[in-house]
Length: 335
Image (cartoon, rainbow, N blue to C red):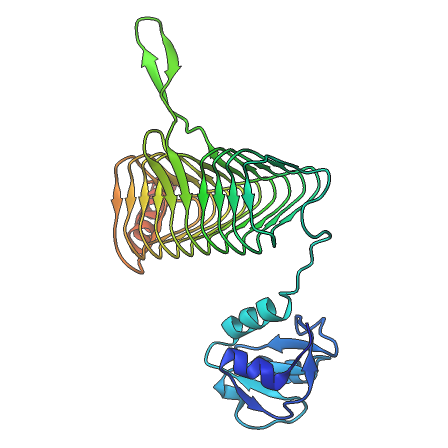
């Protein structure tokens, strides 16, 4: 999509310094930029490199001043955020290879799809599915009966959505994700020494503006609901168990597992390979470092506090324990 710098500045709420009629069509890194691209810098030390790149214009902070020098500048307090928003705007043209419903798709006659919905090859859409305007269903997806998908959603290839799931608006689900499968719930028969399945008949609800990375899995509730709230972003290869409640604007990195009935409150940050046991509560704003482990029923609290280790504890305490262990080990070796 081609836009003038004046249009981009108005869209971002940025201050434009320089020629406003120059046109941009995309974004790039400083090293790969060419004519028509936008780049960004967050530190003054990188400004000269950006200005000497092939880009048409630079998004920068107030540190750049009013000196146009080699290129127009778009000044904003948060250059990285402005760059992300510019990218989303400039690259927003529909890149789907088909329009409407592909002839190979199987759509049940009771399904209700808005006329603007795109359904690609080999998709299966079961009875009573509802899909709102401008959503896109990629190749080979299976959408279970009674599922509701909001507007402007992107469901990438080979996603499986079990019956009855609810997705809000602008939800992005990447390839290979499974939504709404049975939770890992069993009851042991002590007399027979075997396990029998506990009912997994609850729901899955995903609110607006959630993104779920490739090959992740989210179980539906056992008897109630698994819920992922507005704005949460989940990386690849993450597992969310049954009855979990994840708050708004949570960020979860790859290979993390969240066990059944855990609660993750708003704006929590969870690093990679974190293990969260059942019935844990992570209170708002806490930060779990990579490979942390949270035992069952534990409560983690402390907005902005980094927790690390297994069992997870505040990072100052964790580092102090490591230092103590190192001293003990050294003393033992010296004896």
